[in-house]
Length: 262
Image (cartoon, rainbow, N blue to C red; front, side, top):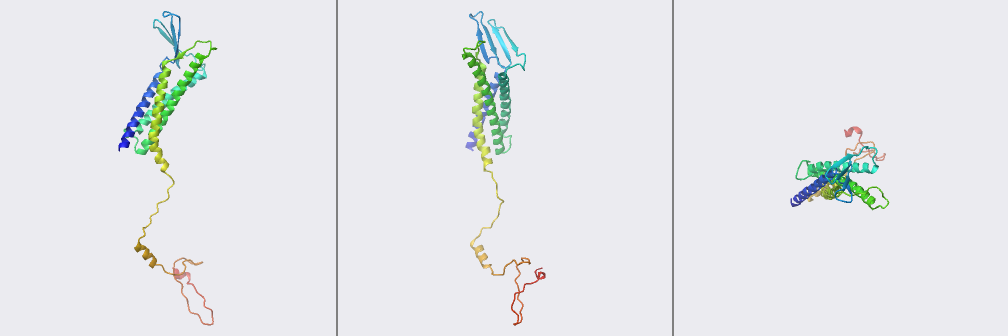
C-alpha cells in the first residue's frame, strides 16, 4: 500500500512537470522574441528588430511597434517550414499525452484495471517524450542557426541574437523530457512487466494426489490378463477361451468370434 501511494505521488509530480513544460512550449509560439537585434548608435535613434516563426516586427524608442506576417508561405525556406512543423507537432503531441496520462493515472481511476491504467499511462508518457523531443529539436535548430550566423564573419546581412522564447522553449522541452522519462519508467515497470510474464500456457491437467492407500489399491488390482489388442478384433478386454480337441489333432488356440464381443 505504501509503495502504491509513493508511485501515485510520483505520477502526479511527473504529470505536473509535463503539463508545465507543455504550457511553456505553447507560450513560445505567439511570442515574437525568438531572435532580436538592435540598430542605432544612440538611445533616441535605436530600433529593435525581432521575429519568430510567423512574422517580422520592428519597434522604435517611442514604443511604436509594427509586425508583418511573412507574405508567401510557399516562398519560405525549408528551415522555417521544418521549425513550424516541429513546433506544432510538439504542441499537439503534448496535448494528447496529457489526456492519456490523466486517464491512466492511479489517482483518477478512469482507465479500469491496474494493468490497463499502467499501459495507458505508459502511452501518455511516450507521447510526452515525443513532444519534448520535437520541441528540443525546434529550439536547438533555431538557436544553432542564429549563433552560426552571428559568429560567421562572412555573413553580411543583419545579425540577430537569441530571444527569450528560445530559452523558455528549452526549459519547457526539458521538463517534458524529464517528466516523460520518469513517468514511462514507473508505468512501464507495471504495464510491461505483466505482459512479459504471459507466455504459451499448457492446458490445465487435473491429477489425483496418490497416497499410500491408493498406491496399495492400484498394486492389488493388477492382473496378468491377456493383451487387450488383437489384430482384426476390438479391444474389449474379454479373455479367450480354449475348446478341447481330439488327441490326433494339434492343440490350437481359438479366439471368439466378433459376435461374442458385442
